[in-house]
Length: 427
Image 1: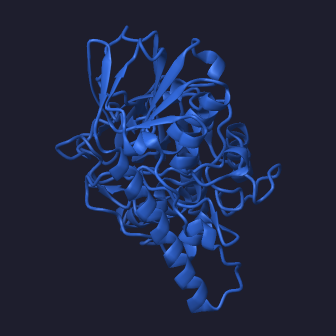
Image 2 (image 1 turned 135 degrees about the vertical axis):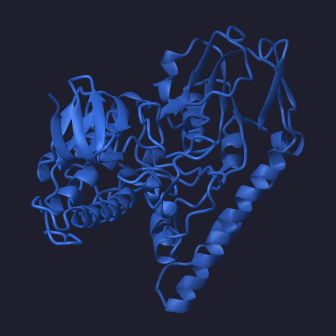
């Protein structure tokens, strides 16, 4: 015998908890299945010193503030995980931890899906894949195993003491890569940082956090890019109270910047000659945001202090003007490589026609081409802010509204009537 429910939500991170809140507001029966603990990736797949990249007043759900974090401060990874546990308790989310979903298949001859789990099957009318974008760590197949003593993904990095003595190459200059490189350098390591194309907004400008600026400038609501468009790496940090990522400052502190990691041969790693161009592109995006902020202040007559020094871009360091294109790993004493190179989705358990020819979810605002299947927590699901804590909450509301509407249609002229068609929210 199988259990029955209206909606199965797979994953109890920020996306799954948000989804549960909105389904509950509609009075829709549902179960949230989590193979580990609530917000597990925040606890066990991030480095020890990680903090949120947005201040506590911004990186949260509307219904609950952080109880132990100043609104202008940046929550630690444990505080973020505890926040989602508290939120799930507050809303009475029906989360079942320690339950792994092994497959989802559409029923034949009747609506809904069979969800196979480690604790038995569940039949559901709708399924929401809320496992997010950080499912399978990606390490490009460039450096063979054994070329250096340790190679690991940033999701496996915890602290400098975890790595053997020696220099470290960090590949990837988004938020994870720059924070890990900075921590390693401060621990006394020699560090090389491979920098690709990126966006580096100011942490604060004219007394306001960049999250505020993106909000008032309407940039969090930027339209979803075309399907398959490259996701832009954002370099911003909440570490040590929050600061603007400045690659020149990192170089001044002793980190050697190199270009995009390109190839490896016989102990020698080669880098693309693109470092100066990547730095310049990040600078251009940084300055453009400052100019837009200045125009906003003038247009609205705001009394915010001017900050002309923020517009001053210093000279490029020697590692940028005369970049290293090759690195003999043994000769430089490199014993570890940390790959801060992102993640790929893993939907092998979702055996439905919801993907394009490249295996990516074929969806619009979380509604997939497979009726009854939804995605949540993905970058640019509906807007720039979709993969952020507050953004996923708003996306979940749209998905829940869509499910409620579909339930209303399916109940039309049946004896099983969950609500009027289309169904409305209870609050």
